[in-house]
Length: 196
Image (cartoon, one colour):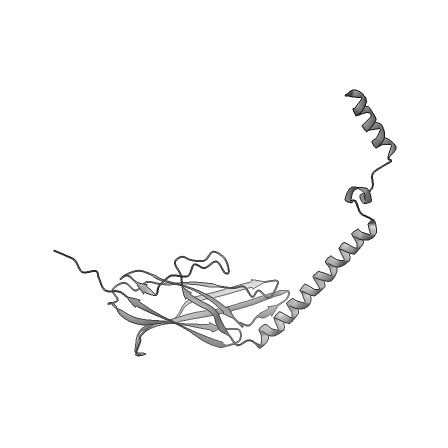
């Protein structure tokens, strides 16, 4: 056993010093090719980012996604769509909304987007039952033009009678001075009949 170990050690020592080429089982030129491919891919990614920014500037301010959810989202895209728009009396209305096409205010090396949110509760006929301007606001400053932005919006309608309604959020982009409406029909179910 000692002889075998000694033979292996001698073979390794005679092979000479190991180089990066030996370690990666390749050559320096293949490592350079991999680095060049990475640089090319990064350049392609940055070009796609520039194209996405240009397309964003042409987008109207709107909501790409708006839905009732079962819980608040922790991250962009982390929504759990509510299986129904029927709510029990007093149950909070939780919405997940993804605005798109909002504007940025540039200051130095930062970009800021900001806005306010109004809401209204209407009957299905359009009659406004209640509303509030600027019930919530948002503002975010970053070193990049962040586009993955979402809103968790929650309303409590305690005391509202059973019936069919429409929740209307008006998103107000204070940078572009634009607004977008999001309508979400919902129903408050009647109290379960009690048996004597």
